[in-house]
Length: 384
Figure 1 (cartoon, one colour):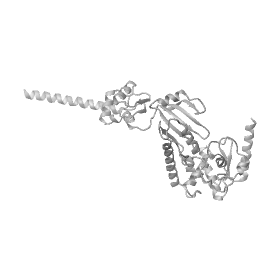
Figure 2: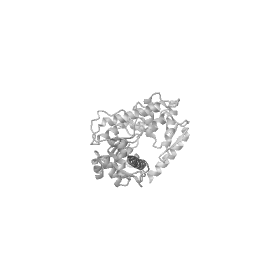
Figure 3: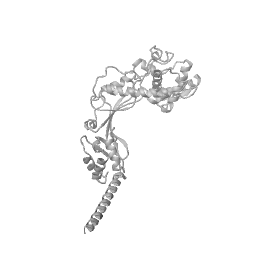
């Protein structure tokens, strides 16, 4: 009798073990296999949210097939307590395991609304944009010039939202004074900037910022990044460069930055200035003259006068025989690398060609012919 009972109990235990094992295998498969999401979504995780509320939201939006398995998987992987607040892009077909990794990894938001303070050479703009999960492209919602145009209502709403990402984006060739001026006009930042950082010392790039952040902290981040970029480029410089120090490289890079906005031309422009320095020729570049007038505080807003081309300032490369004493703007990585690895050419001159680029020349006669073409283009444009 007891043997029969033991046999039945053993059989039942084996069945239960098989069932439990099957459930575990099934649950593991559900957790690790591709998920049911047909199109990418943007998942907002508010501050103070739990893995339970996130799993319910995901299930409701069709991103996971079973909210309980999602929660159990997060618990088993010991990630449930690591949930981060923010906006996260959940790709189509993402597994539960991948989603748990996304919402616990941290870092910057990967979707949702962004407010971008754009600082350009000639103007400053505020852009509000939102990432479309379906296309993984940003859709612009508003753009305006602060202190010039009315503030867009969507901007105010975006700043009030807790999950909005705020960025400070600086274009190549912007001066340090312009950057400080832009930071001073962002009213939700803190800290007073005691002095403008040295020209050329700030890396043009896009920086994530936050409400209440100290302006000096942002400037320190920019300076640290530029220092790293310059150090790396200096370590990888060509053997025959004409600059003798990293600071001279920064000066030359700033001139290259201001002379061309065409990426493919940087190496050629760098070669022209390198060749002229080798021959002891004056660089004769207009942006240095302009900097001698403005000191980087705003734009000139007009053409140069002949008297200004002859005026003796420390930056006027029509007068001084070599590089100016400081950079004339903050150059980007590409211009720094071009200054330290110029193309190998025998070019000595360049002038605008009317297309946004430049016509390069080896001899003065070739250059004068290019200048005549440019003057003709200018005359025709002015006539129209």
